[in-house]
Length: 224
Ligand SMILES: Nc1ncnc2c1ncn2[C@@H]1O[C@H](COP(=O)(O)OP(=O)(O)OP(=O)(O)O)[C@@H](O)[C@H]1O
Ligand SMILES: [Mg+2]
Image 1 (cartoon, rainbow, N blue to C red):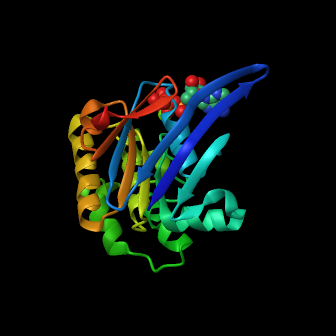
Image 2: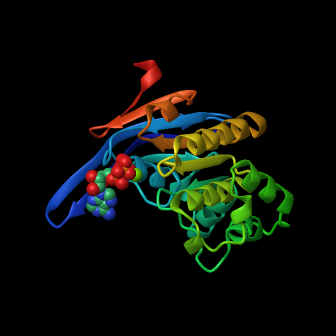
């Protein structure tokens, strides 16, 4: 089992007000799954993805990643799990500003203490249409280009699970299709599992499991 979430609930407290984002969310991710989560703005998709990626904590419920209950892990063990097991594509992609696109892409290799896989980095950047921008710094890239760099970075370590928050949000139709094609290709060839959030029903439809998050409830569309 790659991921098992049971009864995750999350609320935010603003002063005296409590905002419940979602309640009793459960899902499983198996090897080779490509899971999509659709839902309107503000439904809690980013919050859920951050919790699944251990960047945020739920108020209650159990999260098991790589067969380990994350509540039982020390901060160091958690950091190691994040680096070795997870790849992230954030909605507001955090490229490091002082590194070029190419250097950003090679960072996961370096953090994992592996040799730079220059060939793979070039292949992926080429596939996704930004190889000629590889020596640009993030401020010299468009939003969609930055996003694509972040996607390549997330794919470099062949982690078992990739979490992608609205990865096509900034892209025109052609580049969105190309990006989704890349996810599908990698998912099929390397059995990397994906959890992808989206507003777009076409993107949602590529999931072998499709979920909908609304009014605090996660439901599986193909099982309604
Ligand atoms: N730190 C916070 N404190 C209080 N409320 C928050 C906080 N972060 C998010 N929220 C609220 O929680 C809800 C869910 O936010 P979230 O970012 O997860 O939504 P989303 O589904 O990803 O939306 P979008 O599609 O616009 O990205 C929103 O109503 C938001 O205002
Ligand atoms: Mg979001």
